[in-house]
Length: 173
Image (cartoon, rainbow, N blue to C red; front, side, top):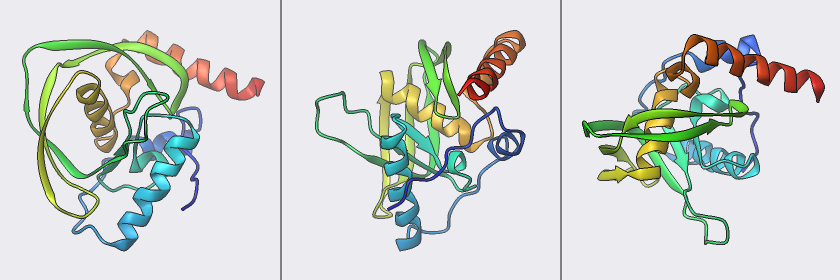
């Protein structure tokens, strides 16, 4: 396993990759599991609760996630070729952050509940209902696979301020 560099919005080349649409993978194999292991290690190191493959420069429809709270046993999750098959009309607002937009947090409204289908780490097909933080996180990460960042859900002014904040923080570091 290896920690990979997380692409960020303050770097034009990174942003160009982050805005691309990822592709489905034909099968879950050892190489893909290696990528997922690297992604999980990278996410834990950051630290974060979710990471899409595009955030480490891989344009494949893969997400890793761990919603365990501090002090709980890790509960890693793997989502290959995830699809939302149903979304509630009821909306839920949550203050989101993103490893590709470090130190920026803002409220985003998303469907409160979704039904998802995906392949797991072993390549088995899974269907699952998601709500609350799980629903927020899976939708946030799936947006990445479509080239959408959480700040794209904000007003242009807030989005521009977010990018400026990240750039300013990088210059100060």
